[in-house]
Image 1 (tube, helix red, strand yellow):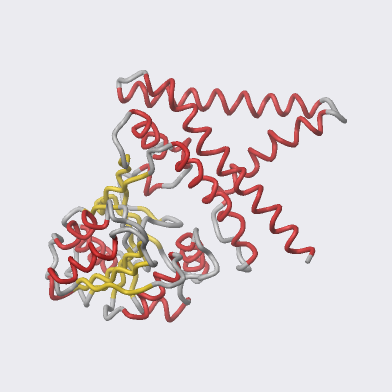
Image 2 (cartoon, helix red, strand yellow; image 1 turned 45 degrees about the horizontal axis):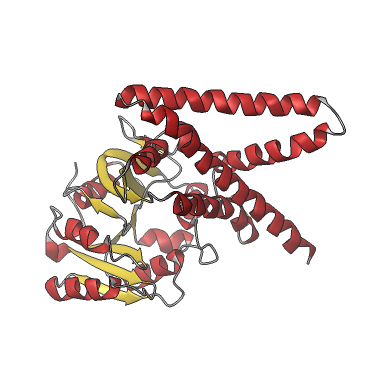
Length: 337
């Protein structure tokens, strides 16, 4: 790795993160990086739990931790507040739901220089927020290519590779002067839209498997489904605010899947062959789901995964796709006004 260069500003958007913000800040405070060479800006979105009190305790303990206010409460606004207040030459965006390996910052900065990249990130090891087998099943599904497609930062990689997006991200601050800040119209998917805009401007995004964070995901099924619906909605709805495609094609596959299983039976009432297409799609989905469930159960030597994962895969794809359908309908109605 090349020698680190410049002052670092770490930006953490958060709201109501009392369960995780302490672990997150502890892991950053323990970084193998000179404390006089970085700052941590926690941008709080008017938390209603104990998050602000916990952050203030850390501010008193560590001179390099500071809290900023985000009255609009959404992530892209928090990121932009952090960037505008950052003293650093390099910006690292971190998530409050994660804990970071001791060499995380050092490797982000070093690989940014070594590969001459515009954005550098690593992989996440997904962990359940709560104990229990269903939480483990959700983690397994979110780490599977069938569950999340070619989202390499989730599924992992054996070597560095150029990608479309990464978890978090390490940028030179001057990049934001060149291509703009995060789009504040997007309460979600702002990272994907920014990275696609970066690539469209000729930028390069590096995923390096040596950069590792532990990420805690929802373990309750209702919250898991709601989050997937929201992600699906914001995979499509940003088209109202941007002129380019804000996400990759893989994010639209659940939209086509859900649309087909809803519309094809209706079309079959007028033209019977549509029903056979419907059967092919559903049968193919079930077989692929069972194949990946079997593969994961075999790898983990626990056959309970074979029973739970088909349902978990459905709870990823159906709410996500339905969210995208709802967004598409909302977009159509907005165009008519």
